[in-house]
Length: 207
Image (cartoon, rainbow, N blue to C red):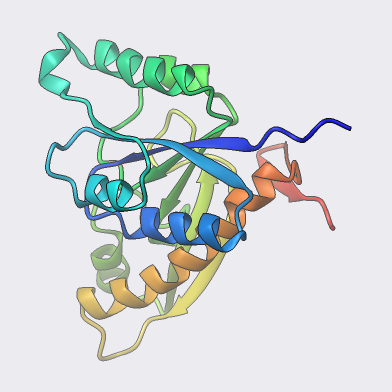
């Protein structure tokens, strides 16, 4: 009998890495059946890199200034991920827009999480957008990455009520708690081959 090869995840992060930490914790609990092979960041002082190092995960700062243009930088990130033979790329607060070549290389194998109920409030400051629009419900979305910003077939969403007393920080914190729940869940669904994209929709195969 041959042992099943464990799936490998590559994570791109630019900031504090709270969603990264949620993924690491889920892997260590066994809720996500995979190995985090590498964490890459375009920010040298990203807290995400420190989080990864504490768990003995290979981490690297990839300096955008060392590449002559955006396409070259994306190719360098792609090269490092392919070198690790990752099955899935997860964006965890990665604050760069991926180019067409990168997305094509990992087509159907890039997940992102966004703190709104997409397609509402894509882009920057979605919590402020939600408050400005006066919505009563916001939330978060895990989706496959396509060329358009914060677009792509939706895997999972979680709704969060918007309270009259909410400021940006209060709403963002409650949404973040849900992000930490649904992102690992969506990753595991992908790893179990339970996600199928059909007509722009993600169909989830039952257990």
